[in-house]
Amino acid sequence: MAEVYVSIGSNIEPELHVTAALDALQDHFGELQVSSVFESESVGFEGDCFLNLVVGFNTCLPVGELSLLLKQVESENGRVKNAPKFCSRTLDIDILTYDDRVGDVDGVCLPRSEILENAFVLWPLAEVAGGHMHPQVLKTYSQLWKAFNRSQKLKPVDFIWQGDKVSPMKSTA
Image (tube, rainbow, N blue to C red):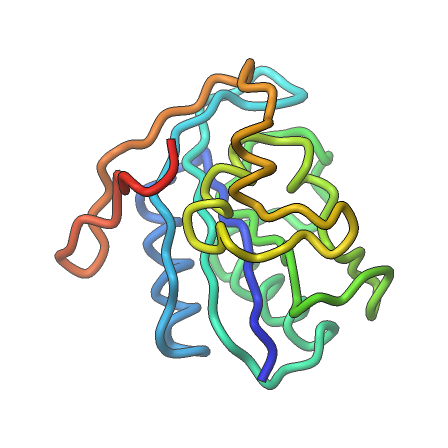
């Protein structure tokens, strides 16, 4: 079984689509590690704020099959396949890490570069996998978050999933 962390983001009916993504991931993989949900400004374009979070789970699927499954979940939630990279979206699910794999695996670059670039990826990843080591820079995600340039606007928000408050967590701030 591989330990996987994925990022989830949405800025079109985000509560609906984040909930749908969590439900789909739970249906496919069972128990999930769910970070706080964060509101962030759109990056790279003018658009509504996003809801972002990171989810961890275990899977037997190889990277390529997992990627296809995540793209299917996006599509089922109205994601436009060939839309511009920087645009509003119903749902975006990206593989951040797959065990400690490094490099291009089945067309997926691991670990995802956004981990080191975007607060909306690193902060929630530090919450759910803070003690895990980034396989290239050899620092934990908690260490990386503590050293991160926090100029990106990001805040934890209340989010209810399956009747429970998912966030905000108090573990890493």
